[in-house]
Amino acid sequence: MKKRIAIVGSILVVAALAAVPFVYAEPGFGGGMRGHAHGGGALGFFGGRHLDKLAEKLNLSEQQVDQIKAIYASLHDQNAQYRESMRGGMKDITETLLKNPNDLAAAQALIDQQSNAERAMKTNMLQATSKALNVLTADQRAELGKMIEERAARFEKHRQ
Image 1 (tube, rainbow, N blue to C red):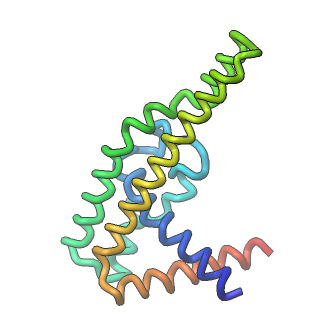
Image 2: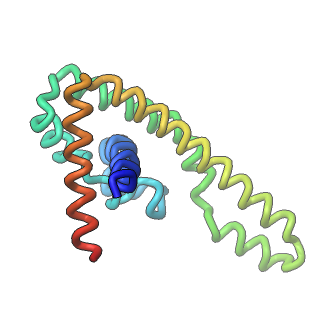
């Protein structure tokens, strides 16, 4: 059970810090990032006013908050090309198959292209999250870990 909480906690840390760019750079969580893994409201719990709350709870300095915002603004710019390439989604694949139901290779190529873009975005997000976590002190990271464990426990309790 402790291992499970640690895994969930780690995932939530990454998700929490990864959500910041989507909140600041894309008003309303729109911007072509569709689905649960790309940032919408599900991952936005530490963005916007939530980042302010987090900054208060972790006693982040203004400089730390500015650094974290800059990291995720850079991530947003870095991932712009990938977001654009993913906008068509299943629509492009469907249109390809409607034109020629036997052209599975073209449809698969579109899926591969989207998968590569998604992987690149996730890799960039992982790197940005690592940079953002390095902005925090060891004590702040420990406190964030506790907060995430508490959140995971509340979530697990509600699931039962």
